[in-house]
Length: 257
Ligand code: KIV
Image 1 (cartoon, rainbow, N blue to C red):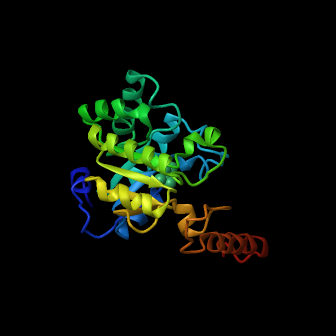
Image 2: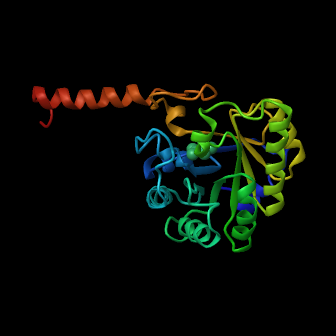
Image 3: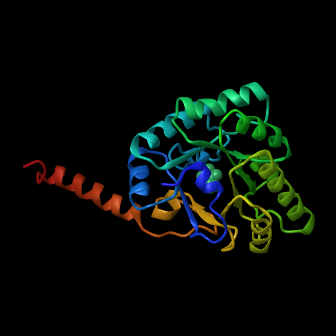
């Protein structure tokens, strides 16, 4: 499994980086076994495992708990954990403590920060302290109330330029890679060409250095998924069939024998 320096130096000619979210031991283990490069404990745990409407209620403690579960499930996978809403970019010492807890108590290898102009200096500070940072630009779901919906970002020249600038500034601040979420494919391509660190896209087209998706969307467990996600399986049907069989056998007396 790649390390943080190996991801940073991945380059543009290597195979695409594969990143997938996981929130518990079992899924993390499977993701590692099939060769996913980076396991992301996304704050999408809020929408998926925890049943919140948005990621805004997710706490530092919830992220630590899910991160620790994921870390217990893997041998050597690179585990990156999201810093949830208002746990970063507010106050330097609180930010450092929150990021530090993800490594100290969660066992993560790195943190991901939904980035803006306000997270440049804290990214540099965390990197200086030995906490690797993955940046995240474009659609940043923690800004849902400000955006009024999960709309594609960077659709005009000015906002595309803003996204590119934030990405470059986070590279300069020491981020080892960057997620580009729900931006036009040509904007993602331009950012990817300009940056030295790898870009990992979600709803950003095929020209990034890697791809990430939410595991519930990939395995077919989500009630609803974003337009750019792809369902690669039907876990909901498989799980439902198994649970129904169990229930039916208990009721009929077929189980236990
Ligand atoms: O929280 C999350 O799962 C994410 C990915 C979708 C990039 O941030």
